[in-house]
Image 1 (tube, rainbow, N blue to C red):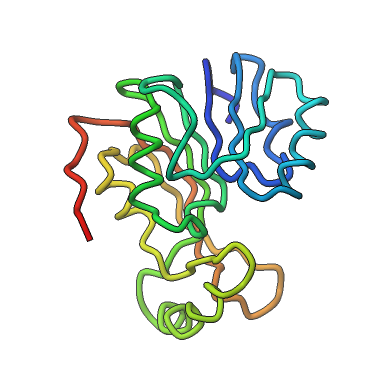
Image 2: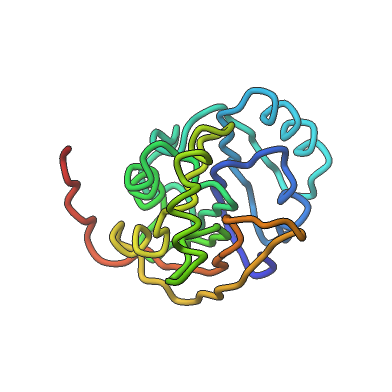
Length: 186
């Protein structure tokens, strides 16, 4: 995040673990967190941040911001748990200024093989856990369908020793591009 500038929105801010990593070139952050307990912790973390951070209780699918209000958007392990990933990405696209940047760190469905099969098998269980994590989402495809051009993307596996079906991750950046895609109904 060292090269972010201007106004930023972060969805799924959690307890504020990302707050110390915002560079001083960021003029303000609107940190969106729907979970009351995590939001309270994020508010405490925001008080010690070196950039102004406003923590708000909202969901990614309905951001309390004007169109074209921010220069960048950040998601960190959040798109797996939103109830409507297309709606959340449409909202991020709406609040981002033209050519604004989306930075993301997300766990995703494996490209193929046994890990992908394990994720498909475990997905119903994971979706019932707190925050409703969907480990079988093709997040990169969702980002592209939402009208973002993926400019950087690093795929990696992250696990802390356990057999964990949510280990495939992506870290990257995408840019808001072209006209908004049409929303599908249903």
